[in-house]
Amino acid sequence: MEILGFLSALLIGLTLGLTGSGGSILTVPILVYLIGLNPVLATSYSLFVVGLTSLVGGFKFYRQGLVNFRTALIFGIPSLITVFLTRHFLIPALPEIIFQLGNLSVTKDLLLMVLFGILMILASYSMITKKCCQDWKINQGEKINYVLVVGEATMVGFISGLVGAGGGFLIIPVLVLFIRLDMKMAVGTSLFIIAVNSLFGFVGDMFHYQIDWIFLLIFSALSIVGIIIGSAFADKINSQRIKRGFGWFVLAMGIFVLLNEIWL
Image (cartoon, rainbow, N blue to C red):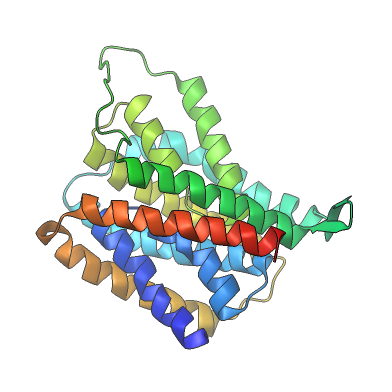
């Protein structure tokens, strides 16, 4: 199972390289079900893997001039502060048993995995429907609502800190609808936001957990190899078709996570 887990690290990067988003949503389930980490540590390691992989993926967009650093700063500061506070203070403060529901003890691990399963199902929707940002009518003359942007950024930081996912499916719509970036610029900018958020959140965890750096660096390296391979073929294939197929896979995985944690 561990060998399969390491091979799956390639899939994380490959999907991210081919589609520009989405692959990181698999990191926590791979670390929990294939590698055998407990969910809290898995969300921590996921932040590092997602952050490093997104940074490498974002470099391709940076070379093409498709990263808006001003936007990344506006969105990134409130989100990275929130993700750091969530990982450094909130997660360690949660009790091992959150509450009792009949004979079911809702533990911290169970809560995180259920939330992650729900997040996977929500993320799969934007991949499957292909409606994310493509057909939205954007009025370039409208004034940017910075209060709303900061609020969305704070929410993304909280979710990323809680479940260890990048949240690209939440960030990209905000960048397109409220800051009015075009789709490619939004994807490139979101990768840098995800990278900074995730790595900053991981720093908050370093005060609380003993990190297995050898494992983490090997797993991350495999993911980076995957994103390099995926990026090389991204222009030669129908990335939207792959993204839709991957969305169905993420949906199935999200349902599996919920069933496995609640009923099995």
